[in-house]
Image (cartoon, rainbow, N blue to C red; front, side, top):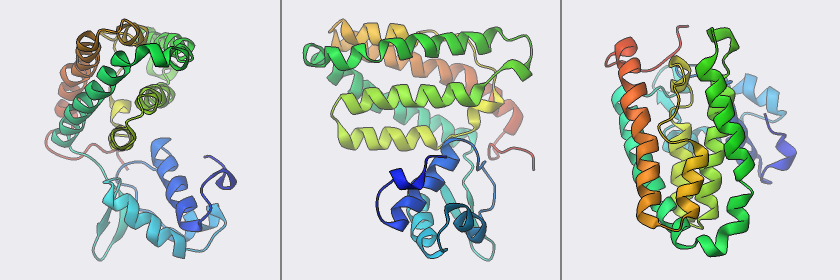
Length: 235
């Protein structure tokens, strides 16, 4: 968990970012009930800032308030996850077009992601080829994948789009843990190459194919396991 001292100054902002990071890092799993006193003690603050933080996270779709029961991490259904991926595909296509159209001004920033793309693809391939589940690290791979895609969105300068992509990546924080990573149709190195080609149409098509792979591969696996219900760990 990031240190609170590095976060925004108000306690409510600190609480918001801390709980959000716990969800992103899968410390708080879908369906888990949140105890304000426990989290407040962990963050060394009173429960008051958490009330505002929880409200903000509920508005973003990461938490849900259940009357008479309390607050828990929201669990998406498979149908909702499909909608999230479709929205991601549309918004990241906008990002990739903008990056390709302005590639000459962004070369240095994009080059900084080259090593990240290579390492991310290596981790995905290692997970794919791992002989058993104990050797896979889907949580770490997914976190690095999230940071890579978010970095591209931020480089594009589309701040509103970037914020929404950030939220969409966090909504299905643990869904990928139920599937075995499969080799990508387009690697992250190839995604960067599509952008740096300067061909905006090709860049759009690349990210659409990248996300479509998840739609075709992951959703059927999750649907077989969870049907129409929420995607949650067995408690």
